[in-house]
Length: 379
Image 1: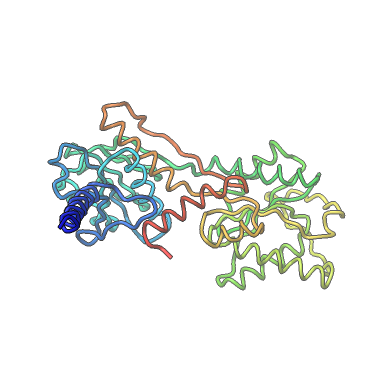
Image 2 (image 1 turned 60 degrees about the horizontal axis):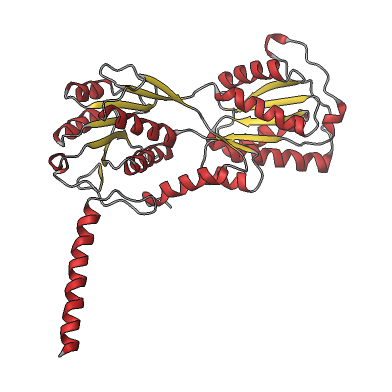
């Protein structure tokens, strides 16, 4: 009889604990290691927000986002959710398409009685949506992209040019560490104009012993791009540093370097050797130091954190990666919402830097990337 009574008491206790767990789970934001609950309606993602959140006496913040399925969208959503969780806010994501879709998403947020919104739109065509939110008393912050929309409370802008100086100096410093007293740095990509101009100014100012060249990709297919860059590197063996502008072109640059090295070891210097590429304005080119032409050794910096790029980085094919700060911009913007809701002053415009990661800082950013993938079930 005593055993039966004990069994009934244990069963009752387990049932009570189960009910408590369900209530706690409803009001909790998702952890960085778990996937979010299924959206209540298409295009939405609730971070543990009860249906009557606005009536519960706490603030509800939202993110209206043009979700194109890209890493930038997922990193922005993760930066928002993770920071909202740390700040103990109920949070909700409104997925929408650019233009009218963003306006509809804001209307939905208004109906939900959202207190503050982030609006993320790479097309920068959401002025009407931002204005609609502001007219209804919602605090609005735009992360990453520059905006001058009426009603905007704060704009967290990602650096679009100043990081070039740090990249150029980083490459030149690495070349100096390799005991190079001359040589060239190559800027490679589909459109190198802005980067080339910034690199040229930085190197001329701080490392005048080095020069900067640009090579624009012309081949459409990947193998064609590898071949044309490999040929360029083979004929210009005094190139000792390279920055790859396009995030998807890192593999092309590494394969081109490898092909040029193999060709040079097997066949030697190409004959006849063409004249060096003329500099802008037809400035006479100095003759390369013959010692630089005896081997192809190029330090490569790349742009963008992805599985492929991180793999190349881990294999020491890439020396450094420049990261687009989508996570950082979303986190800063969410903290700005928090300040606005508490009545604090927030600068109308602030900037986030683009991190440049080396071997000693790579794991931190890779961990954030992996947490994002886990949250959204990205394989």
